[in-house]
Image 1 (cartoon, one colour):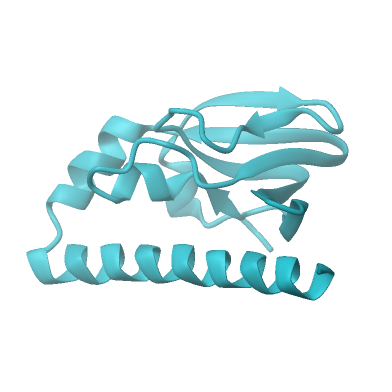
Image 2 (tube, rainbow, N blue to C red; image 1 turned 135 degrees about the vertical axis):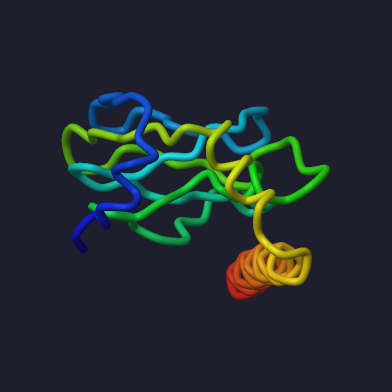
Length: 135
């Protein structure tokens, strides 16, 4: 996947993580949004039966947006861990994202919040299914 030029316009700084480094810790506070510039990362979620890998992210994928765009949400819902070597990330300008998000119509913001809630519900359902199959 390539990185859209519009996304590059939001990159405020860059960070590099070695293989297996935790980029985002599930349950932690934070409002940074990232785009993968190089490398890959695993999205992982804790369950009562252990950690489940939900996805592998690669160049151009954005993560960390749920906390920023979902009103009242303060804690990260999953961990993201560098996978397979160095990962170079662009840290998106949160202030600019919030400002631009605020210019959207209330209907479009509600739609985006609904999509984020649905993604979280689907993630929880997948984790529950994995736990049930492991029992």
